[in-house]
Image: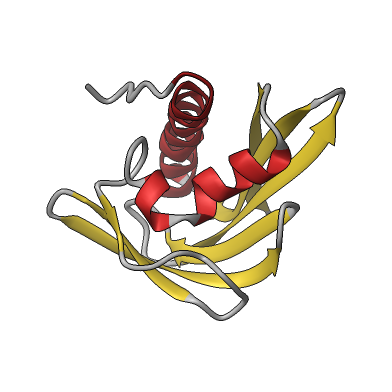
Length: 141
């Protein structure tokens, strides 16, 4: 069965180290995306729990290249299988373009609806990341 894959992106006018750290540092990501993270992301094999209030989910880091990329598997939204997420941090003209790709969605009604929901979720997350890293503003408030 063919699988669904999508990519969203945003440009952030800050050094790659700042942007990458805002994603992997559990004390920073909880300021704009999750309400809590069990630990920083430091290497392949890390298992991190992200929380949004009462909702908790585990991510398992499958690839980690400092200031370049982080990949992880996690439970798909409203489906009974895992999806794979890749964050890429690409320096360009003094800023960073962050790409988020999520794949492994089944091409059925549940997979399509869940992929669309996560596409919007990652888009919002990137906007919140930019607002926090550039302006120190938490868009969740």
